[in-house]
Length: 117
Length: 114
Image 1: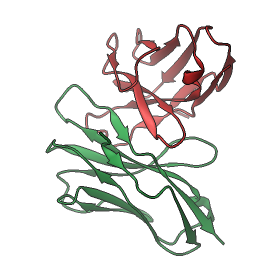
Image 2: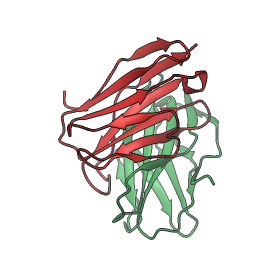
Image 3: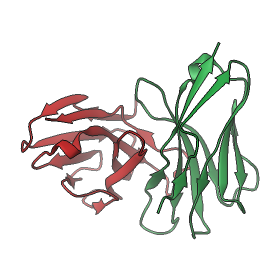
């Protein structure tokens, strides 16, 4: 079963506008972590933001914020004031099982964002 | 710069050939991972290691083997390459248990099996 679901294969956004990328997850663990990564056309994976399941505040990193709704099991990424350089593929990921000897990430299929001038 | 280095960056193999992908990190991370990326499927975990001398199977381990003889290196081997193994391979490492500091990825290896 899919653990991470990203329902938007592709999105267009106008420069300087905000965009929200959807991510829902499935886990029975109480302790887990949620991540967003950016993959530009050059191919590298760039870490953007992290949210722990016990964190009460939504994570923010510069123009990136994570809208964490635990009851809904969603972890949407909000990019504010989009820039042309934000055009990339974005992956949501989850790490389950803190305390278990298993620290792997599970990834969603990704969302391609294209920023228009 | 400190980070994760993967070699080679590109490779073309014939079906049945073998090869080894090397991942090296200089951040003293305990945990290392090999992922493959295929269109529309995100990244899938092949094998991982929680410390020197240990390895474990991930989501899609068939056709691959790994070794972690030194803490800084994690090798991924293909004994008999198949066209289904055409993919982009990423190595990653992490320091903390939670990964809250972010897993560090290498730049990837694009492998084509013909």
